[in-house]
Length: 90
Image (tube, rainbow, N blue to C red; front, side):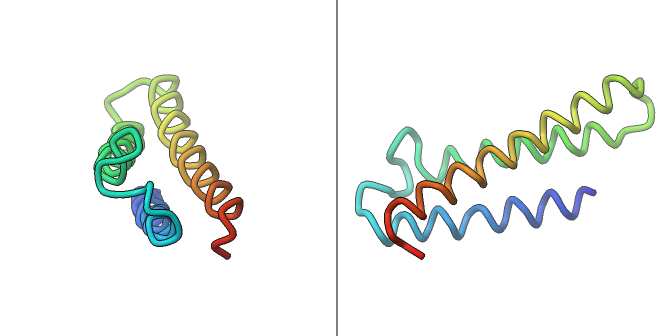
């Protein structure tokens, strides 16, 4: 599960690079933190998924952590894919 989360995160970053190539308003630190903030956000999501796999936590807490991490990965990926498709960068 952790490897799948890392793979999804790695797949989200090229979509951002595609946006940066399509529109010069996208870069390392812009808009709103740019790729640097996206990287931090994906790292937090991956850490939530890893924390959800720790056996010393209760089942309820592990589910909540993993679900929050996966939800955030899906939101980031789908949002960037939508923006990329609207920019005509298919």
